[in-house]
View 1 (cartoon, chains in turn blue, red):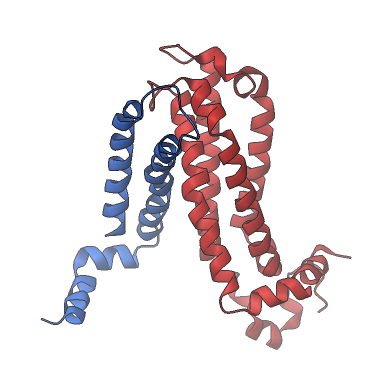
View 2: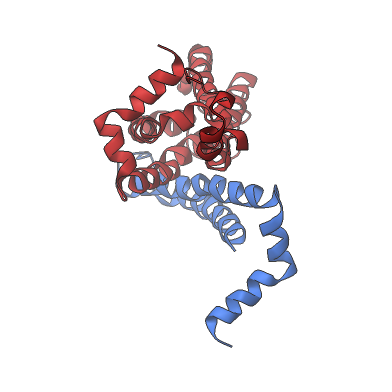
Length: 84
Length: 187
């Protein structure tokens, strides 16, 4: 099967058609996609600020690491699911 | 001058007309506006979660709030600049857009929120350092802030989905000018 016909098939599946034709589901999914962006990237920004030494210099960077991994994973999961 | 004429006049300035008619500039400014959500929105979100005691709990509150403040200000400045450029270039359609109107109202409420909670929360975040459970004022400030900003973000996205009623489309109005409900329109 060529890539384009696989894309056609995916678009025509019941779930995809339901999302595309619903008046509220697509905006809801797209909205969540955008809302998850600050969640995943915000934590990355904070961690980067620590790595650059601009903020949170009180302790080792590893203190931020657990929180960083947790929130960026949650954010990424939401981004990926809603994106798909 | 009526609001409709003022909107049209703003939109018709050389600067905004050039922006609107350029193939690249409007999309680039829009993308910058969205990309900055990641930074600015992200910092606001993490600060609010810290005030609620849900995230970054091993970092003192004053660190999270005060250290990110310069970056929040830079992000906000970029957002507002992009927003003015975007809205100004198509002001006639934005002005009538209810999602845009709600978004601007929510932005004004954000300013009110900052003033209301300045004394109890944002003016002196060091008072919360070392607290295991955050007091009501901090949690209230964070919840209201989250609600307002999530509303702003959602309304911002829905701006694109608004369609003016069919009778107001240029083709329909050409046939029936007396149907024009825009302020300042001459039937």
